Image (tube, rainbow, N blue to C red; front, side):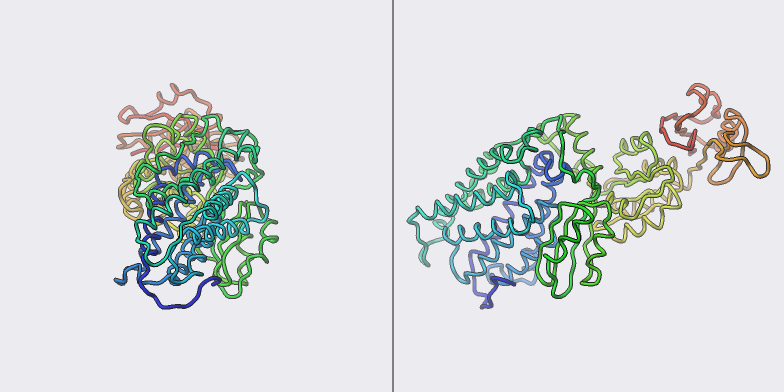
Length: 568
């Protein structure tokens, strides 16, 4: 690896400091993660910059801690080994534009540290490391855009170099750790200040920011990271809070980058031999935009916004193994962020829980066919996948929904027997634990979703849902799509089903009554979801339901089915 030189693993107090500042930077990002997410409009308004930057730094911290599990103190591991682990962890942990760029900033910083074996971390070395980090960030992007986190890290590096050039501070082996921390903290304080100034200027450099009334989310994230470093070096717990907040307006909108034509934020790694990042960029751009390919000759991290994730990944199959695949549905992410802001639940409110705190350990991904039914599932906290009229989403769409769900684990309600195989493939590719529940209808899926225990594991929830479904019967009434070959009904007549068995036909009222009667035997609760063009009023439907069962009448707006019915 460039900049890594062999040498003995002697005790190195600088590595203890390094872990401390990484941990503090992680905590700072976590504290403002949602606020950073909400500002995200460039290169596409998918609202995940804070998540991606936090995941990248968390991967670095986890790698540092994993290295000490054999009992070795971190200061005896050695810079070279630390740098290799840190740069690889940041690379593999990176997601999205911001995460990939941050991974290269981490690489630049770490490699400069390793290039000076045994040297104490003094202001001059910090300035060199920040300069190398800025260079690495710019080189990772084919067409760098000013006003973003690239500008912020470059201007931070320039300011620190200027401060060092006009400083008389010199470190030698007699300098104690407290003095070293104070000198470095003074530099980082300057970095935070110039970073805030750079963030404030961003809208003048990038018109999209100005149109939306926001600053750049990645640039703001860099300032938050620097404030965490300052807190660790100075011991000042208020350093992070003194960084100015930036709230996204509730009416966030405007014309966004052309990535809005692409649906999936696609991230994956490639492992192999003699890999060259540059050879793949032009080919990837045929399938989408926001292309980033970074890494070394054995591991690449790839990011692209595309509608064709499979084709993008296929470019690498003859050169290495595609691993660590993660897809996120940017349309769903943008809609969720905009709905939250419109409801006044932005990060500027008094207290904002993380998704894991708000929604628990395990959640639901549900396949749906109509906006009304989608809303019913969302009201239960589910992440939805639009399966179209035929309820037949692709593996990529399901994987994107699993990865986009805010919970740590998910249960997938397929709501059609045609979706089971695709869902099982998606679960096998997912980065988080997930399980498939083979629901065969949307109305049964709603009953299963009610059985979710947010605090339980996905596999346990799946078992509970399957047990709950044993007490559920499902049916429906639809207009016949064609004349019956046996002459029982003509196209447009009502046809009634229980599960997949045809049990009634004729006029809508007569057919619905028959389905109600057959499903309602021994039922305590019946749910009827009215679809597009249903020919009876709500009062008429209630009048046909068995009197012994409680009826819940909902509006689903689904095509092809006048009524979807479940009985428990």
